[in-house]
Image 1 (cartoon, rainbow, N blue to C red):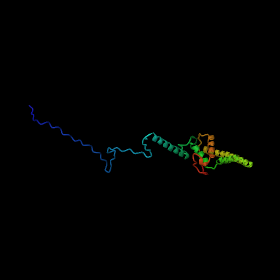
Image 2 (cartoon, one colour):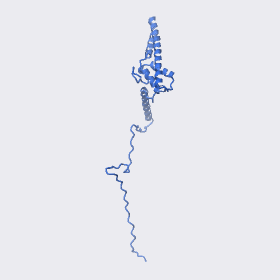
Image 3 (tube, rainbow, N blue to C red):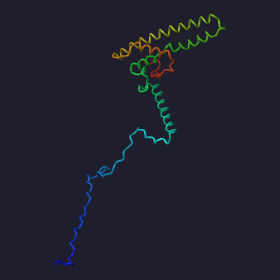
Image 4 (cartoon, helix red, strand yellow):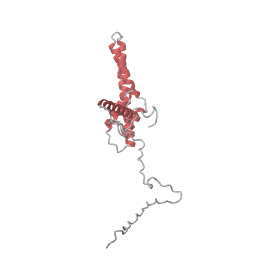
Length: 205
C-alpha cells in the first residue's frame, strides 16, 4: 500500500540560460552600432530638398504652387540668359549655335545702328515743317545704313561658314539657317541679346 506520506518527486531545477556574449574584436577595436544590434539612423543626402509639410487648406496649396512656378520661371530666365543648355530654346541649342553667337558677339556690327537710324528717319519724315533737303539727307542716310548692314551681314555669314566647317565638319545644321541666325543677332542691340554675350568685343574666337 503506498504511503500517504511519501515525499513528492522533486521537480528538476530550471537551467539558467546565459545570453551569448558579444564577440570581442581585436584589441583597440570599437564595436559599431551594427555589431551591437542597434539600427543606424538614415542620413539625409546633401542637396536633397526636405519635403514640405502638407498644406493646411486649398488656399495655402495654391499659394505654394504659385511660388514654386515663380521660382521655376526665374531659374529658367536666368538659365536662358546665361546660355544653360537646359533652358535654351530649340533655335539656340547646340555647340554650333553657340559658336555663331560668339562670332557675332566678338565684333562690332553695323546692324546695331540700323534701327537707330531708321527711328531717326521716321522722326524726320513725320515732321512736315523741315526743309526738303533734310528729307533727302535722311533718306540717303537710311539707304546707306541699309547697304552697310547688308554688307556687314554678308561678312559675318562668310566668317560663320568658315569657322563652322573648320570646327564642326560633321554638323547637320543648314548654313542658310545659321546665316539668318547670325544676321538677326547682329542687328539687335548687344544689351538685349538673349542668351547674353559670353565673349567680349574683339576677343578671338
